[in-house]
Length: 131
Picture 1 (cartoon, rainbow, N blue to C red):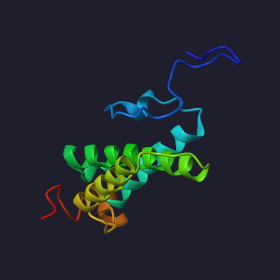
Picture 2: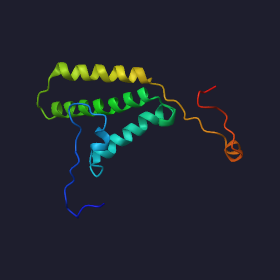
Picture 3: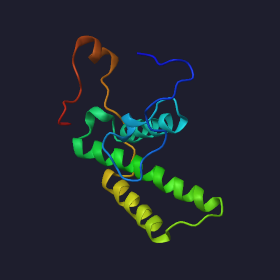
């Protein structure tokens, strides 16, 4: 159901400082940062071969990486505007993001798609287990 023109949404316009699994869904999709973060989630999962090829754990790490990356950007913006941040928290966040990315793998993987002739005939070249 659409709201009235000019009516404010009850959804968030920025990520909370503490991770919640639903943080992407909780963001107001009309806000640029919400669209940006959702695109990052898609980019992460696509780089790993597509969400359908990821385990729950990999999907969870991707979402956490998106959240953490945004928090780091906010800290960097604060620094760029001449304000101070907790340097230890900033460095810990960078280290944690690096660790998450290392667990996910920094190598882009192509999504497995069947050839057109295999698709039309209903055959696939690989099964879900990748054998």
